[in-house]
Image (tube, rainbow, N blue to C red; front, side, top):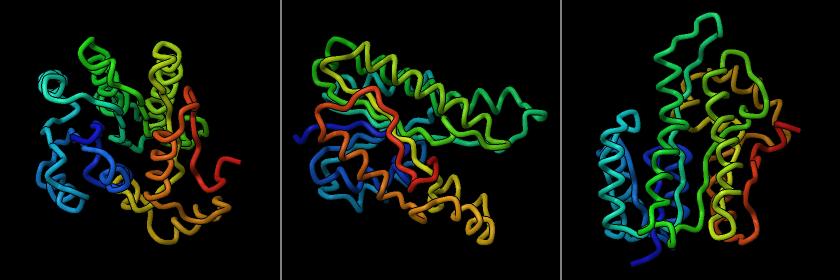
Length: 238
């Protein structure tokens, strides 16, 4: 069997293109709540029969624990890519605790739970890379995006501590994409006029999900990068 990579959020957007980029060289293990959607993705990958799907909603930590136990027994994971993410557009004055907890569970806490399992004695020797798909908004503020920004900021802080804890055998990094308009999370938030106004802030123009997937591949191939927030945003944050 090819080396195994565990991916969350692989059914659409950035995660889907990460899967396409990596499927030639790796056997991919997907955790997804939408089985029919992820099955369609797997059918488009290189060697579809070499990839595996586990149905699980990242909001359900009991189910996620059970899923990770099963994965731990069946596979030796070489890399973990946490691409799952959710954003609630909300102003601070409208703070909703349940929305905040859901955002934190998907963006941050589920990653922590998965990493806990990957560091158990039977799996840790095989693990080489952990990559979190974060956001430029963990470094650059935006009105009404505090839930998303704060959880991605927490993910990056966790990444930095984890990179020291797991060195020298395991690399841990974050990729911070700029706004990618073709993802399911963003394409319905803006009309075409709003999109064009936003794109004026991007010196290199509109980014694509493939740009982020190529960044993931670069990190996996490079031996000497760890603890980094790697910004891929077409110059937006300059």
